[in-house]
Image (cartoon, rainbow, N blue to C red; front, side, top):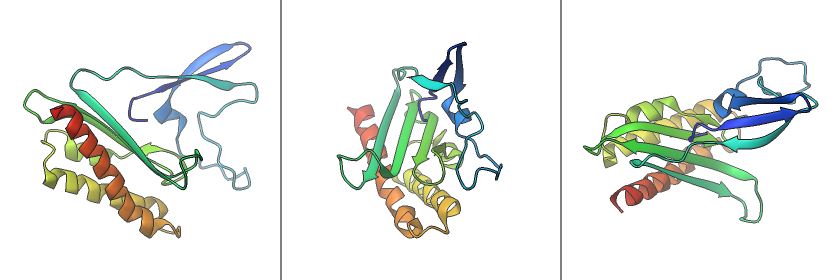
Length: 171
């Protein structure tokens, strides 16, 4: 999600490319008896064959962390991805922050991204970003039993990403 990935979707007649952010969009149709069908969707005769994304730029760093029940299982309780490109003056030129397993599909958090852009990664800016992520978690899943846990744990997982990116950048 953070790397602006594109999905290559093929069938016997050819292929099409769909940006991952477009693939995961809210579906308002209610005729699937509770099953979630995404808008970009796959036809019965299609399958995803590739996920393509660009390599990070020289001043760009990324980190990904997840909370899961066990390392042996692929299922995540929560994921946080972060990508940051720095200007020469150490301010953030571009950012991407995404959450997974916090809602029906993974998504980017624009408010958190906007907080980072134009600023240095100071403790105050990072804390503001973490608070915004926590607020988004609450907005997305406030009726779920896991909300209180995820609302707080997203801060720790995202902080690990920022620590990793700062270490890579200063490295």
